[in-house]
Amino acid sequence: MSTDSSAKTNELLLEVRGLGTGYGDLRVVWDVSFDVRAGEITVLLGRNGAGKTTTIRAISGLNRIVAGEVTYRGESLAKVPAHQRVRQGIAYVQEGKRVFHSQTIEQNLLLGGYTRRMKRAELRSEVERIYELFPILAEKRALPAASMSGGQQQMLAIGQALMAQPRLLMLDEPSGGLAPVIVNEVMERVHQLKETGIGILLVEQAVEASFAIADHVTVLDMGRTMLSSPASEVSDMTLLQDAYFGKTAG
Ligand SMILES: Nc1ncnc2c1ncn2[C@@H]1O[C@H](COP(=O)(O)OP(=O)(O)OP(=O)(O)O)[C@@H](O)[C@H]1O
Image (cartoon, rainbow, N blue to C red):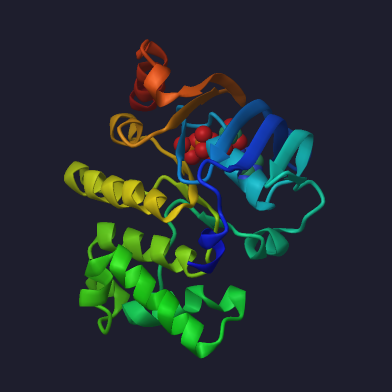
């Protein structure tokens, strides 16, 4: 991938420090801090309403940063409009992202490449790259997206985002609505993606499945960071369990 060839392993892609954001005058995120590095997965956990989606929206430019700093490859994002962030390599697959059901798998992928204004040959080679990452998409390329299972459609949504050649891929609950065995398959694919050198920010409710592939874990509660640590150093599972049981109780 052209953007990845220049990405250094472990390059600090995203630095979030004391982020405050919300909806209009309503502040829902107060103090959130974490990093995402190239070739690594940072998992953002927390119960319903903790502020995970709002945090991702602020990074992608959909919500305004009202406090703190968000820097991408060393530059502040505060004044960069959302469409520019996409061009700079920040991709966001929203929760419950729908693909175009009546279009074929391949047409869906091609649509994902348009933000980059790629030439035909480049689009073609990007599609082939996505097929290598997700062989099931290659197998079904000529079929309408509606013919695929929920897990496969989630992979197509991720493939579509990858067509924009991101360095930073943000995924909001890719496991949403999927059976546990399919969740594990999606997580396995997400895990493989980091081999391409991109950094991944993964918001999840599936605590165990996402923790299994995490390099770094950040737990939010009420718009604040409760824990931010390398996954290998999380020996006390209580905070993670709190996030999990918070969801079940809610
Ligand atoms: N469009 C909106 N306008 C106003 N408040 C909102 C809006 N969307 C979310 N909120 C509120 O912001 C807070 C944080 O929500 P957010 O969706 O970021 O949480 P979350 O951690 O992603 O939870 P979930 O797992 O339920 O998606 C919640 O109190 C929610 O009610």
